[in-house]
Image 1 (cartoon, rainbow, N blue to C red):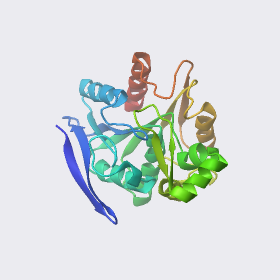
Image 2: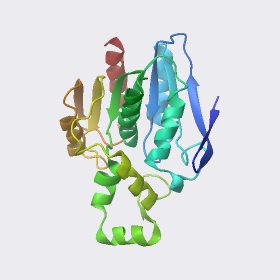
Image 3: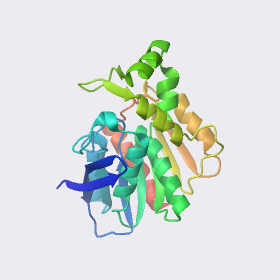
Image 4: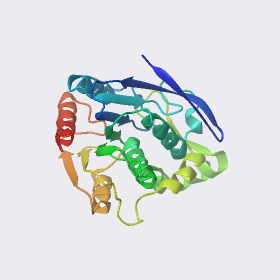
Length: 255
């Protein structure tokens, strides 16, 4: 059954939809962070729900504001808001958690981990980052905008780009500007204090292989494995991809 959590902070006042499959094992769970414009009812999240049920693990997933079943408008979303929501939902979990972050969710996973470390409340056992879109508002968006798009962004406050969904992506200046506060690259090593496994499709045209390798170059003090899937695209949602995801999580459970 879908639950709702009200988020009230600053100019934020809306309900976040989440699903939590509880387990008798309160020591370990899986926490899902989806991608930009994605839903907690997507194929990877649904697979993880069944996977967690099979292995007796708690599983928690949610929709960011403006996504899926949650309130709020997509165009009002920022990394700061979505990170705040991730923190609020994470507080509803029990025990250690294996964070699985897909695309933008990979960036949020690292940001969430950093905040929890700073607060001395880190319960993250490990992270699985699927095509992690670290610093996406800069490296994968604004740095790649044409001069015309940059002009439209300044003039109109947003631009539209094609997407794999029915509607185009609306990328706002507010999203780009806010993303600057959370950039991780170019600021030395990224510390996680937990093992990381990166899953990257070789055929990914949204988050290229080079971007995932850039993340690898920033993780110099923690255990980090990198798996390149030769025929994998950005989604990594084929039956074989999902099976591989499950095997990676089981390996991390045993660590």
